Length: 213
Figure 1 (cartoon, helix red, strand yellow):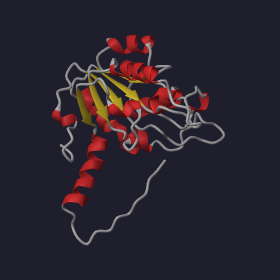
Figure 2 (cartoon, one colour; figure 1 turned 135 degrees about the vertical axis):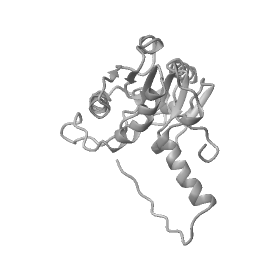
Figure 3 (cartoon, rainbow, N blue to C red; figure 1 turned 90 degrees about the vertical axis):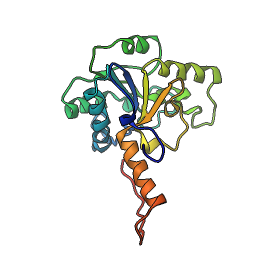
Figure 4 (cartoon, rainbow, N blue to C red; figure 1 turned 180 degrees about the vertical axis):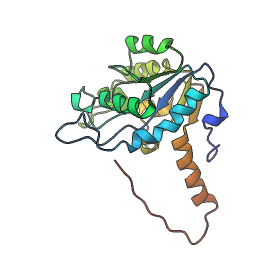
């Protein structure tokens, strides 16, 4: 438990399809967006992925956003280069799917080979992820419902390891449709750190706030 939240260590993953929300919003080279200039966020998700596989998960289906494509398919924000980078870091094949919802994606994730790691295409290529676009045009509620229902078919256990996006009530962050929802190791680590500072801080306390992209 981390601040009262269930983590990966609290659930049995054997034979389960894990739907893992990560934050792969990585920095890209300005001239060549296919080049990732810092893999810190990918590296941060590896312990959670490896734990799932070690505990016998049938598959790990990863989803993330990248940039601000505003509900449109924008090639420079494709997660395809991230899939290649993750392959190198994990040392195993990562299957990249060209969408994140729909019948083809559902079929690919229904009964994959045991130990499969799958990365979905950018969630924000669909306006239903954020619920509106930059022009403040809202997504059709019925389509948002369908979007979330499709995501719910891609796994048996929902794991949120996207701490950098935890403040956003976006479709993929809610885990709607999943009976079992837990925090990944990165999320758990951050929550535990907050817990120490908020509940039993060692004084004097100095707070330094920052981030990395």
